[in-house]
Image (cartoon, rainbow, N blue to C red):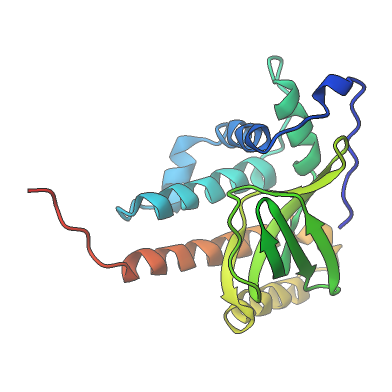
Length: 211
């Protein structure tokens, strides 16, 4: 996985902001069919977990199941974001450091380190946690960015999804890792992430009903 450079001729657009990146991602996710989202997630009653699960499903449906194509009235930020992330695939990383809109991660496949300027959702889990990220490169302004991370817990907890990916990759006819992680691999990590979100929702204390 190498970042895809995005070039713009208009210097007025070089000040790409965090909120613009997130709004552009959300606009792309809204293209997902609502009925398909409902097929993959039943409401748990936990607003945060439900919203996160739906966002992951919508992103998977939009980027991995259906090919995104430019739209006539797409904003410049939507277009740049789409070009940055639409052709990228999921990879598993260990979080090394995190800060305000900045993070250092290490790719588990080859132990290569990356510095991310923007991670959508802003909050990564603590150092040592395994996450799946879809990353892209915005140029300008020359930053690596990532969509909302799929969280699998520490390295021991993350081993389950790693083993599932290795088994599935080995059972298939020979194909490149990148292609695998935009198809079967993407489905596997989303399914594992949704299962973890569901477990979190079921483990949360029941909410009191308003009198």
